[in-house]
Length: 124
Image 1 (spheres, helix red, strand yellow):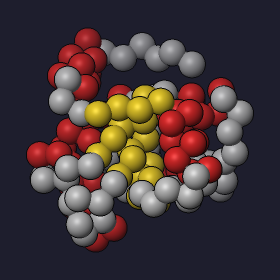
Image 2: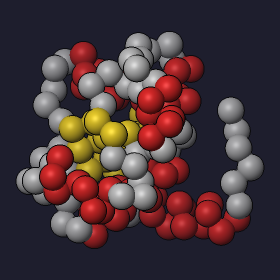
Image 3: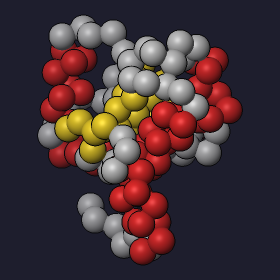
């Protein structure tokens, strides 16, 4: 499901990706299956989250993540995996969290679309 993103948006995403760690959808699935402890954050819009999300994910929209992350994840060393629709907004959010001092943040490349394409379970 390719989208036509504007050049300006793609420029800032590319810049953010140069500074953040990314992982694949299969990596997150393996971590969940292994029972690994981390906070899985859906940064999509509330309506997107309500329509379906990854199992165990909490919602903190990209627009408010800087304001709300410290309530959900008070320790900036705790592991956090962010995802969005395809991996662009989550890269931007990961970059912002790193600027706030979060040291163990990863953006899931492929996002919700990649998770669904892989046929992995979801919840509402």
